Every structure is written in C-alpha cells, then in structure tokens.
Image (cartoon, rainbow, N blue to C red):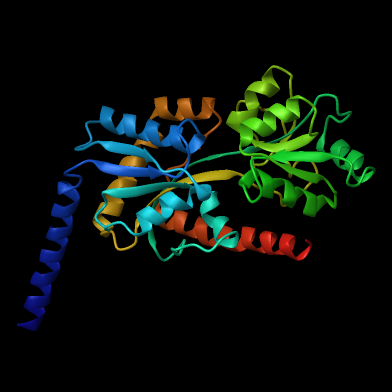
Length: 319
C-alpha cells in the first residue's frame, strides 16, 4: 500500500510539474536590467524580448531598466521578488565584482536560480595610434621602461575592463596609472584624444574606432580569436599566458523558482540565442551568444567570485 501511494505521489508530482511548465507564462514577465538603456545588457535583453515575441511566446517579456550601483539595485529587486518566474534579472559579471566593493542586501549565489549564461563580449586592448607599439610584447617593453608614466582609462574602478587591465599589469609586472571614467564612451573619447594611452574596452565600444584607425588594437581578451578580427591575437597568444578577462551576461530568477519554470526559460532563451539571425546580429555587434545550462552559469558565478575576489583583495592590500 505504501509503495502504491509513493508511486501515485511521484506520478502526481511529475504531472503537476508538466502542467506548471505548460501554463507558464500566463502573464507578462519582467526582465530587470541594472543598466541604462542602450548599453550592452539592455540591447541583449531587448533582442531576446523581440525574438520571443516573434516566436509567439505565450506572454510578453518586458525589459525594465533599473540602473545604478553597478547593477545591484536591479539585482536586489529581483532577489526579493516572488519566486514565480515573473521577475527576472539580466546580469553582467559585475554580479561577482560588486560583493567585494560594497555591502549588499542579497547573496549573489544563494538568493538566485540561474537560468542561462546568455552571451559574452571580449575586452579589446587598444592604444592611441601615436604610441610606438604594434604588439603586446612591444607595449609591455615600452611600459616597463617607463614605470608609472603611462595611463589607462576604464569605465570605472571595479568594472570588468578595469579588472582586465589590473590582471594584465599583475601578469606582466607593468605599472600603468588608472584614470577612471563614468562609462566606456567617455574613456574611449579621451583615449582617442590622447589624454590616456591605453585601455581594455568592450568590443562593441571600441571596434568601430579600430576600423577607422582612430585606435590600434593589440590583443583580445578571450581564449580564442574573434571571427571579425582574425588578425588580432589573444592576449595569451601575444605573450601573456593565462590571461582571460571577458564580460559575460546571464539571466537569473529569484531563489526558489520552480525547476519547471527555470527549465522552460532556459529552453526558450537558448532557442532564441541559437537562431541564425540572432547569432549574426550579436556577433556583428561584438557579442558572442552562449545559451548554456543553468548549472553552467552557477559554476561561472562561483568560479568568478573566487577569481576576481582574489585579485580585488590583492589590489586593496597594495593601496
């Protein structure tokens, strides 16, 4: 009798899970973006939203911008939302950096259910064309001969491009002075004006200026070369083994969201990112689509908390 009861309970649970997944979404889903409209996170989120609409998704995916505090305002909102699949968060790897910069009202791991790592974008090591270097090795040699004399711009202390240069400095033993800006655009403008000499900048933000020869690209931060820049080596290939520092994006739901809903979201988001037109659009703008499993995003978050935490703590000790 007990065996029969357990069997029936299992059948009921499986059936209920299937019904839950089929019924979802029954109303508009909010995708909260912690950055201003027009940025990479916003563009990616809206592209997914439009494509889901094209595939007759049962409800609309509404992108809502809640900018501030490197994305943590939006992330806190989602952490405290009902775990019903109707409030989601599109994050960047600032999710694993901000915990080391300020006290947060949420846990970056425990308070979320990962859905998928949606995409990534490389950081491009670029210099002003007047700098007499055409490779990473020449740049390192030039910098080592002038400790503390060169400057690099970034979109702000603690951001992915900033940490990319700090990692580069640590691995090469170079001393380049940081000049923070309130965004990539301002840093790129000053780099083109010669006010700073170098920077790691997102591919979408720097590629147009490389193509019109206003910036010189030395290397790309990914483990592999980029298809639209086949002549530009990776930083590791160019003589700095072990270097990798890209910006990634991922979708999260609040912790406790039913597995059936998380799996449904993963499946639908991944299908969008596999579509040929979406892949081409993303690659043309400097974004690489991923669409990985929820467990893979969870592992990326855990690993990057360790990796960037170690670097940030070492930077604090040298202040």
